[in-house]
Amino acid sequence: MARRIVAIDWGTSSLRGARLDAQGAVLDERASLQGILNVPPGGFEAVFQAQFGDWLSPDTLCLISGMAGSRQGWREAPYCACPSGASDIAAALAWIAPGRIAIVPGLNCERDGAPDVMRGEETQIFGALDMLGLADALFVLPGTHSKWAEVRGGRVERFSTAMTGETYALLRHHSILARTLPSEDGALQDAAFDAGVERALRSASLLQSAFTVRTLALFERSTPDELASYLSGLVIGEELRAQGSLVGRRVHVIGNDALTQRYQRALACAGAQGVAVGAQVTWRGLWNIARSLPE
Image (cartoon, helix red, strand yellow):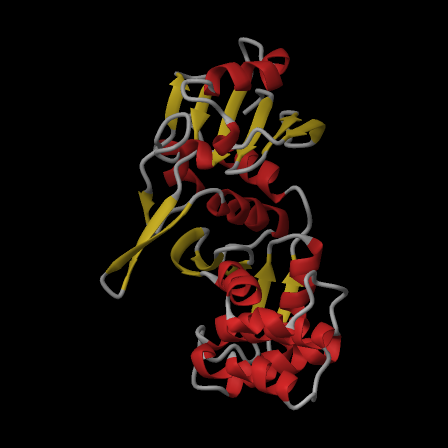
């Protein structure tokens, strides 16, 4: 495919875009705070044109991933069922302007009789696979709602969501534990974080282990700053415990630097190897999807 690509990541709170050449190299990037929650009703096309209209030409292909394809977004892009690869995604694009502007669908899978979904993470996974030259891999994409995805033969076979970041925020700010913690998180206390991970890995559940934040404060065995890191280790460790044994496994981590470093530490505690995936995975993923379109 020789067309230039405009790659857009339109999330809940932010809007990012990049111009790519025919080989997928980034020519230019832009970002704003006009995520879908900050777009007035009926305003998506106007925001899009204001941000990226000068990048478009008749022979440019624009692909948009993320929450722009949700029911609250520009146009709903129905989920693709797992297993799915880049070519399956490409075949299910929701076209805004046929042949020129399209929204990438997310993925859904069934787990224990209930559906699970992702939007945007699938694009990052396909970008990482292309960047790393892999067809089989285990990924974790940490965040407010962390995603774990198993990939086989270049297709996402299944995935699961853990409300890790949101659970941390709830416990951190809206539970009795908040009274023992500082108002703001400081620098990560490595030993306290590791202790939290290790306790979570051997605990029956977070419902039990979380109370140790209170008791460690009560008996003055940890400082408030240490306890904030300890709680972070507990919730991330609980996420890892739920995955079953990770001993000896290589887990590719896609996230910002701070979260990636925490997950690499936690994975090491669980006997796994956490491999950080470089930047630009979203752009590479959109380019990979574009490359899967028929000529």
